[in-house]
Image (cartoon, rainbow, N blue to C red; front, side, top):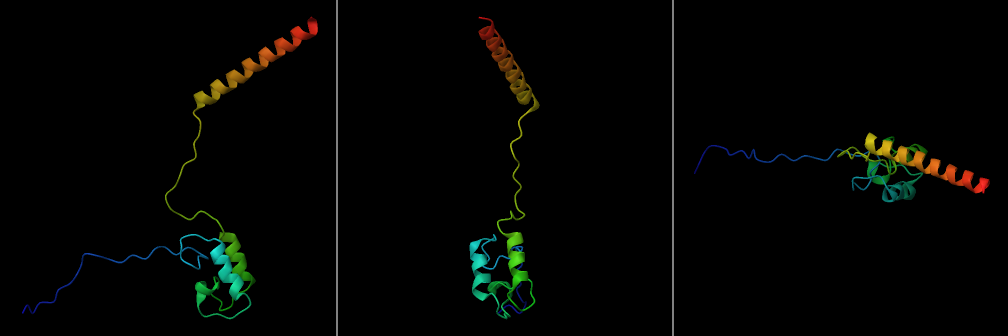
Length: 115
């Protein structure tokens, strides 16, 4: 029998960063979280966010509904996605094409009026 104690240092449990007003813990504030407020609106609760008490004042009320609406469908912090931005050359070619099309249209309407 080995008298020395064994310590498991391999794994550390990490809890996800809590999202404000996410009652069901699914990682987003949506209709399910609204239902938690709706079901318990006007009641006193010690269950906290699980019951829709997002302000932590012990009651599910207008403050909790306002907090929920402020966070509803708001993208949470995570991997950032960048929007596609056209290159300046592409924009320049597009502008040149629009000028050429406008010039052709003007010449055509002028020629139709002179005939």
